Image 1: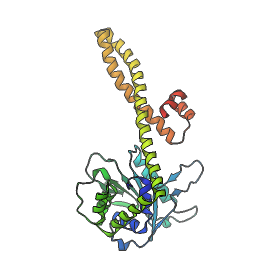
Image 2 (image 1 turned 90 degrees about the horizontal axis):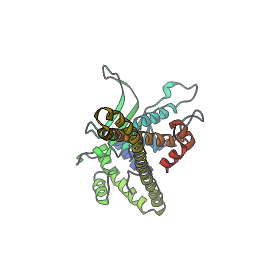
Image 3 (image 1 turned 30 degrees about the horizontal axis):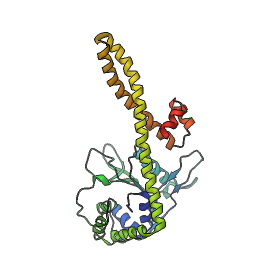
Image 4 (image 1 turned 90 degrees about the vertical axis):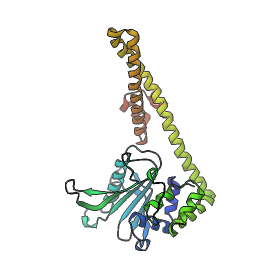
Length: 310
C-alpha cells in the first residue's frame, strides 16, 4: 500500500504512535511533548440543511485544545486554497455554540499533504501560513494556521531525522526499500512502516485500499476522457468560428488565406472554450448538480452534458 492513497493515510493515522510522531514533526516539538492525540469525528456539523457538507481525512484533538485536520490529496485540485480555508474555518467555527464566549476558541491547523506542485514559482516544499499585518508583517493571530506539504518538491536527499521532511520522504515512498530506509530514521517512522506492513497483509484492508485506488484511477481517466471530448467539441465550435473569421479576412487577403487564419484562431478558441466548458460541467457535477440543472446553468443541451459526463 502507498501512503499517498487517502485510505492508507487514514489507516496509518489510526495508530496513536504514528500519529504522535507525525504531529510532533508538524508542531516542531519533541514527541515526548505531545501528550495526547484524540481522533475526532471527521464530519463537520452544519448550521442548516443548505450548508455545504465538510468531511475531513483525519481530525485530531491535542491535550491543549488544539485541533488539526490532515488531508492527503494526490490529484491536482484547482480550488485547493479555497477548500483548505473552508475546512479550517468550519473547524474553527464548530468549537463554540450559540451564546458561548469567544475565549473558548482554540487553535486550529489545516495540514495539506499534496502529491502535486501547488506553488510552481519556488522550490519550498513545506510552508506554514498565518494571518499577518501587510505593513509590519506582525502576527495578527496564531489561532488559525495552514501547513502545506508539497511531496513533488521534496529535495533528493533528506538529512534531518525526526522532522517534517523525513515524514514527507516516507509518504512519498514507492517501494519496500524506500520505506525500510526511512524506517531506520526513528522509532515513529519504524512504527509507521510496520503498520504499513500489517495493513498490506490484511485482506479486508487491502480490498478497501484497492477499491479506493481504483476509484482514484477511474476518476482521473474520466477527467482526461471528458477533456478529450470537450476539446473535440471545442474544435467543432472553433471550426465554425474560424470560417466566419476567415470569410471576413478573405475580403482583404483572399478566401484561401482567410480560411487558414480563421481555422487556426478558431481551433485555439475552441480548445479554450472546450476546456472551460468541460471543467465547468464537472465542477457543477461534483457540487451535486443534476444533468438537467447543469444544462440550464451552462445553456447547452442535456444530451451534451450527459455525453461529456459519460
